[in-house]
Image (cartoon, rainbow, N blue to C red; front, side, top):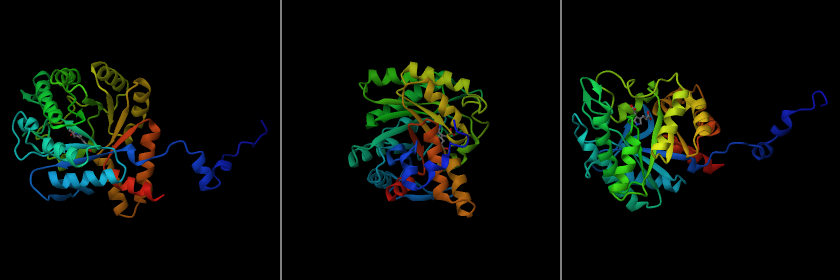
Length: 325
Ligand code: PBG
């Protein structure tokens, strides 16, 4: 090779050339948009820690879902904030709870939009843990049947996908069996197989009022230091019947997304979580970074790492921005 003959700048000369050689491109249907639904009508309550994101009621969630669809987004992910919470999270499987009602209303108004329902008890328990407490510890095997009831309630309401985020062992297999027995063979399972015990969930817990009153989630969510464990969990959930796998959070775990993507052959989704969103928004609001560029760069990095789809609070803003160029 002639010394100095490799000149990377030849392919960076102008935007047309850069676009021709670009390896990763974002498009609106890369994004899955999370919605927080509560009781009431006409609710659109801004979240202090997440500018641009609102607590919604069923009617305003439908409006938001329509906007997402118009912007080219293919899926929403629903979370519920129930009017009352109890020890076992029983409003989680109430067919008249906010999530089943929102599923029916969204499927009715925008049938082609894929509706994913998050399955977990933390929004529904009065103690804020993701399962039933026995002697202060979340009891795995007492929790799984309750998650199954919740998943069935969402499938009955018309959810296309159920997404268990609780981190109990054995729930994917139990949910698959119960869905099939109930005739929901077409409902797929998006398993949060790889979910870390992360400080980046802070703003979400405020929005969903789901912070544990005592203790933390380290007894069921994964240790941020581990990556080999992620492969084991992803493979296990696929073996139990997960149709898709989710890795969460995204930005501090790009290496995990990459290896999980290589280890399993189901679609891999990454969750660009609330704290990641809030940090970027806070820095942008202070004028410390260019918010739009930082957003697209962060989302591009998640896709480049190997995520096929990205759950993100930036979905509407990013989709609108991509439509401009
Ligand atoms: C519920 C759940 C959490 C998130 C999604 N599902 C919170 C948690 O585990 O405490 C976090 C999402 C986010 O931070 O954006 N189990």
